[in-house]
Image (tube, rainbow, N blue to C red; front, side):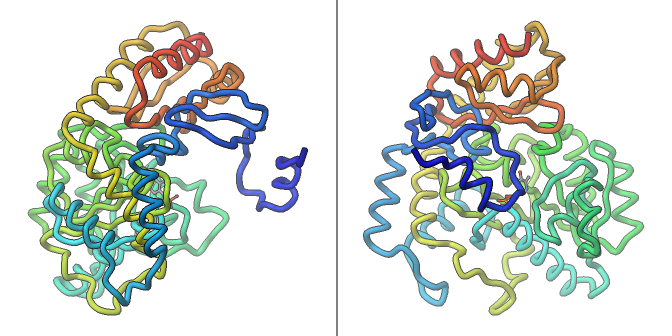
Length: 387
Ligand SMILES: *Cc1c(COP(=O)(O)O)cnc(C)c1O
């Protein structure tokens, strides 16, 4: 048998500390390794396979598009891209969408749109973007700069200038940082995902939104991880009753195909004009066809099920031996464990459940449609591993 692990170790760049498991196939929320061992998938990639593996409706949409047109340059109109943009705008009230291939690229786009808006409105020196400490916005040199975690920065200097970090849930600090600098935008994740599944407080988000509006500073939400139904609303900002000027998203949007989107509101819909931005693969018709299948099915009923399953996770794990706290919203869950999170994840894997970590927490991002019986079965394994 070909030793895939050895080949991978030799030839794939050394950037991923992989688990010693080779996954070969799956169906829904179940995945199988090369020996045929079954796992319940509580990570769905990292919140990517929104309706699980090989979901039939999604697969049909993707295969149908593959048979028609797998790619066309953005010099021409194509149907899936236009239909998906319309769907996203109608469901959010945003005005325009720019499609990308990844979360980092979606963030690059909202950052460019924000700087262009401020350039046009206030002048070239209004380029600062305030982000939060402990945030995560991506791996490119600019989105690393946006990421408010020093240890991501150290080895890659100089990063793109113009980013300033404020304390999460500290409105006075955000306000001070925004006023000390010539600020174009404030950018936040409603729930800091990579930072440890930490939701922002309601009052803080509302205060920032009101302040930003008053000062004509743009409000950007990075919904790369929290978006597309993950928290029990289509986008997590909808849990907070605020209206952003720009939203970036990716991960779950196309059910497992590479796609990102930058959503632009009333203020910013015309910020980027002809030639100001582009992407060869962005808005790929196959990815967009997959995304239409996903986004069209994220309705109130599904979102309420996401909330109910999130509550079920909380109810099952709260107070369990070895569990200190549960954080998150909907099916974006952090578990603060007494044991090191990595040890819990390894034990779960041995017992047929795939989980993620985020900082010191065990992180769960299961498929939005994970069947309740599988979810309960996984929770029993997780509970035992935490004890
Ligand atoms: C994953 C993530 C990104 C980066 O997305 P990529 O697709 O890996 O570039 C950016 N922001 C947040 C909040 C994320 O969770």
